[in-house]
Length: 181
Image (tube, rainbow, N blue to C red; front, side, top):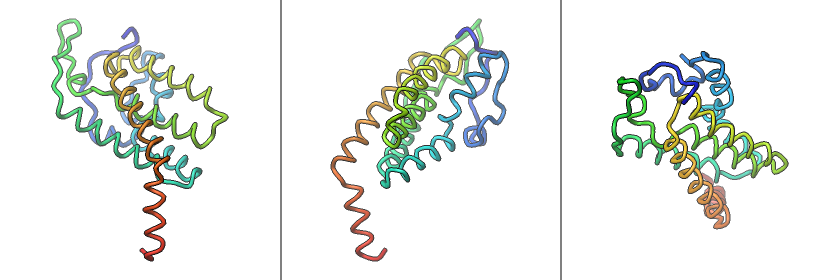
C-alpha cells in the first residue's frame, strides 16, 4: 500500500452514503483513487446500475445490485478476520473491510453498463483493472479485500445472467401489470 496515508477509522454511515465526504486527497495517488473508484460508492453505483436497468428495460441489474450489497454487508459483520497492524498501530478500518464493497459495486456497475452499452466493454474492463489496483495501492483495501469483492461480483454477475435468461423478473412484472397493481 505505497500510497496509503495514516490509519483511519471505518467510515460512518453518513460517509458511506455521501460521495467524497471526508475523503483523503493527499497524497496525489489517493486523490486519483478517490475519483477513479467514485462509481463504486453506494449511492453513485446504485444510480449507475439504475440507469443501465432503465436502458435495458428490466430490473435484473437492480435486483442483483441489492442482493450483492446485502451479502457484502452480512459478510462484513459476520466474518471475523485477524487484526492488521502497520508500524505497531492496529488498523481498525480493516477489521470489517472484507469483501471490498467498492470493488464489488464497481464490477457490478461495469457489467451493467456493458450490458446496456456493449461498445464500452473494453474501457470498462480497463477501468475495473485500475479500480482493483488503486484500491490496494491507495491503502483503501488489502489485496484479499479486493479479491473478495471481485469474487462476490463474479457470482452476482453470473446470477444476473441466470436471472435474465430465466425471465423470472419479466414474468413477475407482466403478472403485476395484468393484475392492475
